[in-house]
Length: 341
Image (tube, rainbow, N blue to C red; front, side, top):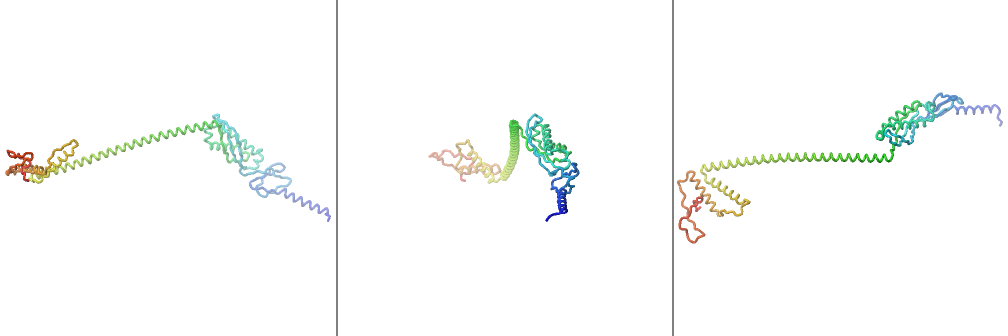
């Protein structure tokens, strides 16, 4: 089948329309922005989704990624304020806020941000001492973020974060810092040990003081108790003496005998328990003790009015040491007037 001229024209027109449609329809993915140029001049920015442009007149200029991106800053040498050389690397996070400014205000955006960050790292870290540099990393990050973000604002860029990843001092400097840290820790250990010893001595002194106080209080209480006991004993002794005196005044012979016998036995117990006594001479016959008590009773009767009845003369007693009786009468025992008892 042969096609006529009209059919060919129709086919050409259909193909042309399809090509125009494909050229005028633009699909923008999420997270990107497309700039549109008309005869080389920026006109507008396409948002994500389906967009139409004028074919053959307008074209896509730049495809900008508006998601937050990471930029690694390579390691570089930095001279600190106290002339110490350190190596530092960092990482930078940025985001395109204005696609047109990012596309037409700066050429090679990533390279520009990278060089700007490196330059400010040298400036910020070079104005600090080594000790301050190693201990104030957060302050360095804040200063870098503020400076770099202010510099990239005309480019439609927002720097969200700048972080120093690592700072490497020279090896000899690291060794010197390690020795310094060791010396500092040893000094702290000695100080803590001295403080602990001082506190221990203070606590021991406080304990000794409290012990002495309690011991003195105990001695005082014991002395008070002993004095009170002696006072009670003296009162009891006085009371007993008073009662015996009243009994003697009343002529109670049994009370006199009991009192004298008790004192006699106490005296014998004291003599027998004395440490310097080796030989004790004492009567062993019970009749002698009873005779002594009877003699004392007779003396008491004479004192308290019973002297009108004189005691009978003592009965002569045989001397076991001699075979013949004695010529004269036996001597009178004043403590045993009644030998028959």
